Length: 104
Image 1 (cartoon, rainbow, N blue to C red):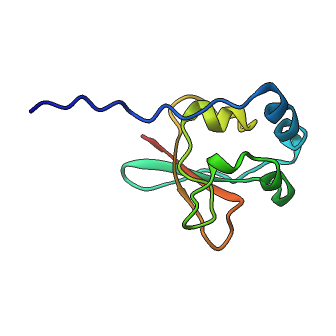
Image 2: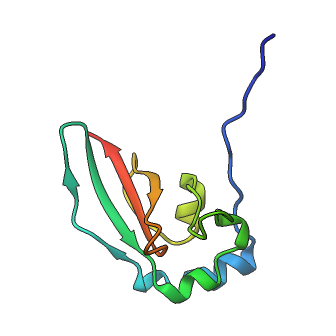
């Protein structure tokens, strides 16, 4: 039996949520890029206080870290990067750090 699966679309922030998270936009820190044979990587450090205003459904309830965010979601949080970057991991010991990669 054929089942059609929809890729997870995520959820855009409401205007009120977006206004709250964007207060922190100027404090987001971007690491230098680093790479291996296949991808380039960088990590993005959100201000710890910002996590308190990110909606709870953006978090993984089991780990307490942000779940893997869609591009619309991370851009909605005020993270600005060129096209092609993908959020692929959260650093559990430091939940305000998001790991990104882009195929070379």
